[in-house]
Image 1 (tube, rainbow, N blue to C red):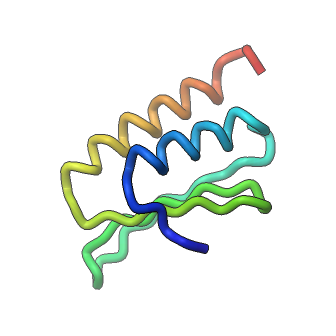
Image 2: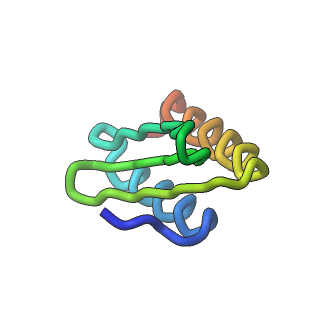
Length: 78
């Protein structure tokens, strides 16, 4: 499992992964206090995407992405 380098790359790949098969995709978000970093992981048991950041401004981007993902989950389109 490798970490994607940029937030934009992770965001696009994660959204594609979710839209491909919403029933199998799950994500976790974990804050590692000892390393002062936030780790996001999204997987469908075949593909695993990870993103790690130590920058506090990325938290807003992550929050916006999670809200968008939740909107997809509650919509009736799939």
